Image (cartoon, rainbow, N blue to C red; front, side):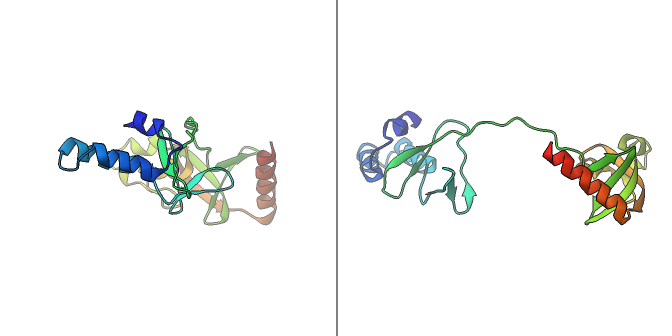
Length: 175
């Protein structure tokens, strides 16, 4: 089926569908299945934006495995260019470490925090019920901070400290 569609790229969709309808009768189950599969592989109502990406109902179409096909505004079958696969990148920690101190931005307020490994708090039988200084559950702290730590103490930062943190983060982005 993919080979068939690949060989039909550049032709009018109405002509392609006429050929499929003439050779695949809907009364035969396998032919009906083939027609349904073709419809699932071809996108309609697709818009090509300035980056060459294709949007359908506000979402982006990806062609990571095999070929994905679409019918352009002129009714011609085209192949969607394959996207490159990106390797998983571990998310950077949300805790900022500066001059031996740790800071965390919670609801747009910067706090100086003290962290401990989350495993230390999970070791007891009741450890699963432990919450950190911000009220986050120990079991989900790794998702909150993007590292496996628990905040045990917090103290709100002043204006000077916030300026230092912002300056540090800006220099980190520029690098």
